[in-house]
Amino acid sequence: MKIDAHQHFWNLEQVAYPWLDPMFGPICRTIEPPELEPLLKAAGIDKTVIVQSMNSFADTHYMLEVAAAYDWVGAVVGWVPLNIPEIADKKLQEFTKNPYFKGVRHLIHEEKDPDWVVRDNVIEGLKVLASYGMTFDVVAVFPNHLKHVPTLAEKVPDLKMVIDHFAKPPIKDKQMGEWAEQFTAAAQYPNVFAKVSGLNTAADWETWIADDLKPYIDYALQTFGSHRLMFGSDWPVANLAGDYAKVWTETNKAIADNDKRDIDMILGGTAARFYGVK
Image 1 (spheres, rainbow, N blue to C red):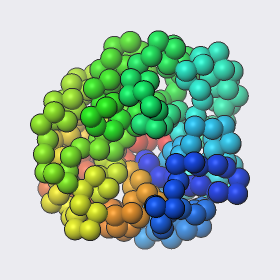
Image 2: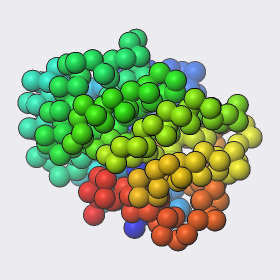
Image 3: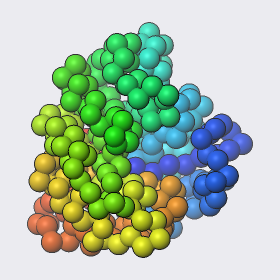
Image 4: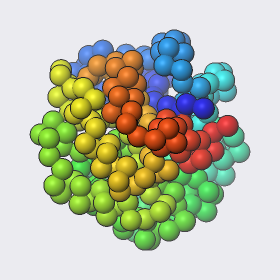
């Protein structure tokens, strides 16, 4: 089974997305399943994971409605207010009754405080999340958030986490340095995973190819292993630097010289296990 472990939808008439500015051009509009469906078929994708795009209950309800309507949706990563643990608990009681709801994400990179995710009240919220057996997508954008992943792993050891987009490494600058050190530190914890996603928008938007992504994916394979890596398109954000087909094709090229088992894990096996996609 091939799984796209990171894609989005948004309906601007139903949900507010203040971050979605006209400067984003082609993605600053309502984008829904009929637009993605043929792209999935062309790539041979069996299931997807819809990931939250706004810190709101409305966005989560919208995603769950979409999941119920399309059989190729395997999971939803929604939102609860982790900084208010008692409300997070109440909403998780509700959301976890839905079989598509598998985890939570918060747009931590939109918070003014770069240390928001390690505040005491947020840690308590993450402990509540872990008690439900739910996952946490970490929107770590280097250099502000990746360094906090080991702290989260130590303070909430029962929480399964996945670093979205490799925390946006400095691909455009063809550097690793401090990013690699922090990425390696995060990889030391077995409850931490990473998504091979969003790398095209960390590279040169106009000229990127598989060879630009490969050194970072190879490094992730060395540090995390394929059993903790999962492919995600980050569509439709991916359209800012290419399109679905290019992300899929170039990612496959970048991992082509690995064993079939490793390739299968990255392209579906890990996501199926992490999110419980069937």
